[in-house]
Image (cartoon, rainbow, N blue to C red; front, side, top):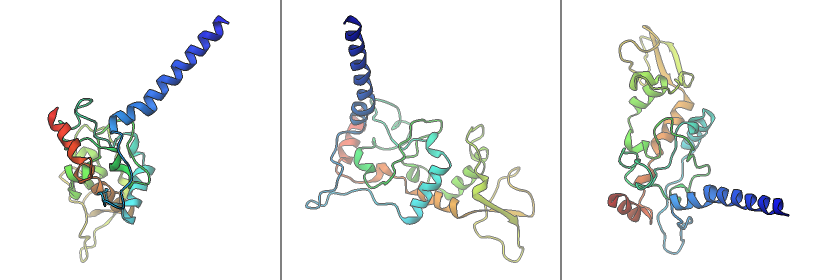
Length: 214
């Protein structure tokens, strides 16, 4: 009988701790906000992804970007995300409501990308970074994604206008050029669409005020 009591108490403690971790803490971190637009008031919601951006999201998922990058700016009371420039406010539940598959992530081997479209919108920098992270971030442990680019001999009469301009010591070598393939272009469109802190949704003002108060 005593063993049953201990088993029951252990079960309840396990259930309660799991519930806190999987339900209570996410609600506390994101805010328990209404997640559907009100058709009567016309409250603002984040824009939906275009078809190209959706394809880019699929490329993002297929290449495991979510395993090293999060898309969630934490409150100032929890982490230094805002101080590090990852967003001007914490992300809230409504930020994700138009995303079919939210890529919030679980690890931060690399920086948070929730607002990379605002923080670093340069296609030139991002293409070079994705082709070889050592070009832009020496010492980075991020793997290169050269398979998302096409390498070919330069046609002297018709060179590609969107060929990457490599710094000295990088690139495929003289006489060759590198251009992003269609998957890479889609991924770039998706990354540039990530601007969660810039949307004027109903909770934005309160989230910014909370960030400035900390």
